Length: 414
Image 1 (tube, rainbow, N blue to C red):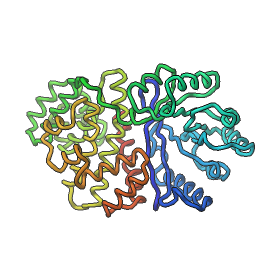
Image 2 (tube, rainbow, N blue to C red):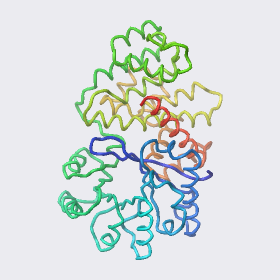
Image 3 (cartoon, one colour):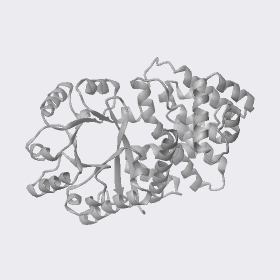
Image 4 (cartoon, rainbow, N blue to C red):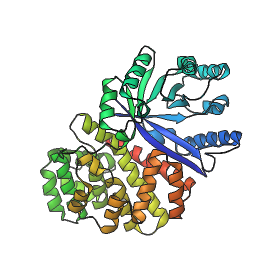
């Protein structure tokens, strides 16, 4: 698992539910390798190691993984090591495709593999030839005018393929793609939705924010209990969660106070932070917030794991790192300015610097994690050099560990 890099970006359906991740696998120093066979071997090893190291369920949960595959890798036997039920093989639409390559893809498709064509901006002769083996066409909507996009979608609509809009970066473009009938969506807008000005925060979320303040501020259990009782839905969720994780107990937990004492403050604080990303209400915005839950949880855990490498015996530093990661998307979810959240929670200076300006050690680590999510290898390498205590291979191992933790949490709360 040395010198490999793993990044991921969410892919959503028309209801804004998370259905897949695009996974970015790269080998350190091989992004511009002159020795192509080595690059192929390295990429192959990265994929097999990443899946073998933690298991595909831990990396992806219930979602599929879209993986960028080059032509040389298709020609090797390594693809058959990947489980066809969990991966979508993504090939570049700018490549030229010979008969031998198309025949190999057809064989893999017959064996149950799905193919996506990436970065599509036209329907040229090369694409026409490869299209019979393609399941999903990823149209790069950032490179097309409104008129070009409408025309291109109409050309593909008669073909038996699913359309995915990629590089969706604004609310307006998201709405346009929805109107054009795209089935799947990917881009910065969905990975971290924009704040819509004038959006009012959900009252249930404000109650959670108040609870988080009480727990972080070391208020007594009676006060926390009282606040929970004002929110019957939260009380039910808390007891259900405690009962599901405390299955060795002789009897069911049936009071809020009992739940809080059993869970402990640190775990209660984490649970409230995660709950801030989910709501019982339906609607596109809330579903989009749910899609952020995994990103926020993974950020928190990865920040904590990185902090543990930097300062192994400083539990307080690790806890603060977890909080910075988990709170870093909260302004987006609540529609509240980050400064307001910091003021409400009374967050210490080093954490607020990290959240507002990406400054200080925690700020640098948050920057690193954001670059990791979007697959910016050069930014990641430069930040790792600045931090000086972590290698790219170690970061990947921690990323896989964080993903495994997030998926276990998701199963416990499902």
